[in-house]
Image 1 (cartoon, rainbow, N blue to C red):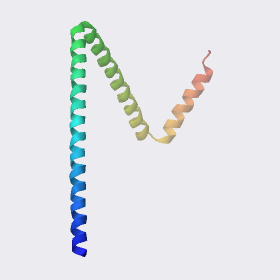
Image 2 (cartoon, helix red, strand yellow; image 1 turned 30 degrees about the vertical axis):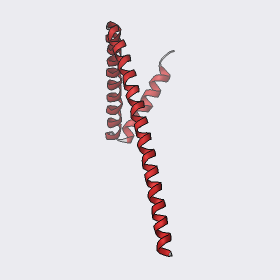
Image 3 (cartoon, one colour; image 1 turned 180 degrees about the horizontal axis):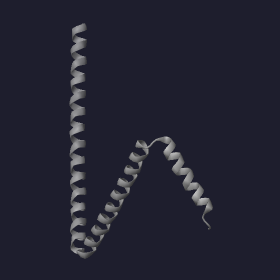
Image 4 (spheres, rainbow, N blue to C red; image 1 turned 90 degrees about the horizontal axis):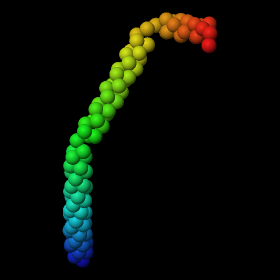
Length: 108
């Protein structure tokens, strides 16, 4: 009897696995169709923006300018950070104190 029950349980589990596999394949197909439709929409949008020509060039130039400025700013921050790590703490405090003193002495 135990063997019959195990066989029935195994068959039930196989049926569940088959059902879950079929569901997973159906979901994968739906996702593939959805992603392909999204790609076609992106391609259509890209073609629409490519037809605008000079506007796309101006936008691209602005983005590259912003990127250059962002990169330069990041390099400045990294350089300052490295300098602070290499400098002694006493030197950093003295320079800061001098900055505060000069700032107080300058007329507004």
